[in-house]
Image 1 (tube, rainbow, N blue to C red):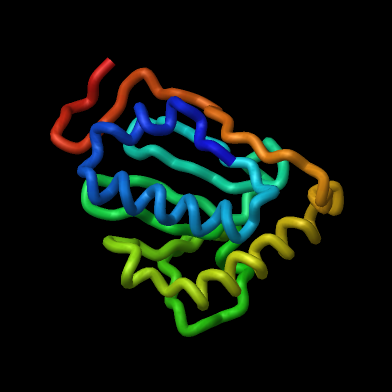
Image 2 (cartoon, rainbow, N blue to C red):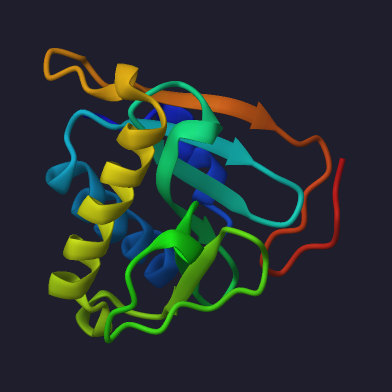
Length: 156
């Protein structure tokens, strides 16, 4: 699936390494789960991208969020995942993540297992998500007027 053309615009203010890492993580997810939609939010404090087998955030199984010095790779229902050697951060009711600074240190085999478990949790919550003939889309969900981006103050 090709990324929505606006995605490159949204991440342009970030350092080249953060942009590269974002696309490496994106490719990791979309190659692993090619039938997943990409839901994009250009939010106030970060660009967030969720992956879901529907066009709804509630069905998302994982996400990435860009910050000035790292990218968070998270699971929307991470608190429900089986414990692994990868320690996920987060104290909320559901969401858990790891901070990623480079793709070489990203624990690919462990994360692959965790993604498949997260997909299973999502599908168990909504059986309509199991559709092998679905054509995925890259969709901009919202764009915040005011943004904080690396090296910039909030702008309108």
